Amino acid sequence: MGFTLNTSILRTPTGILKILEIVLVLIVLMICRFGNDGHRKTWGSDDDDFLGQGTTVGYAIIVPAVLLTYLLGANLSILELFINFVGGVLFIAVGALAISYYQHYRYDGRATGIAMGVLAIITGIVFLIDFIFAIKNTRFSVVQTRIGV
Image (cartoon, rainbow, N blue to C red):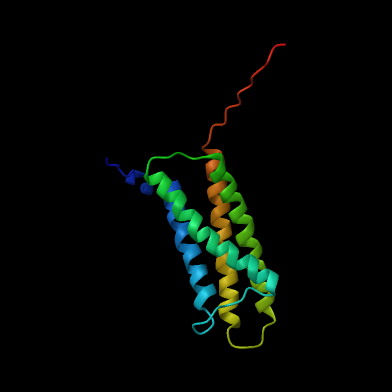
């Protein structure tokens, strides 16, 4: 039993955006994990930190899985539209939280924290661009059923 990979998806705008999302999410994740002189970089308060780490780790798993489904021959799903929209909102939110936290930070690591926040916002914008692009290129069909009594 064999399977084929649809590598042509990597040359489409959708494939390029997914690769860009993976790269950006992994960069944000590495800054979050090792950006404090080899130690974990915080996103702010405990709640902000929980949201930031959850978002980056979750999307570091989800986005490669979505790209893999494309490589295996799947098409765009409604779930991916939600993933892109929610990812855009979450990354912009945690990026803003990080910038807000490190903006008045007076210790070493201020620049790294702000860079992490800016990269998170850029990642969120890429997710929203992917969402808009997917909406634009998706045809929705509504199926109505009627039950006669």
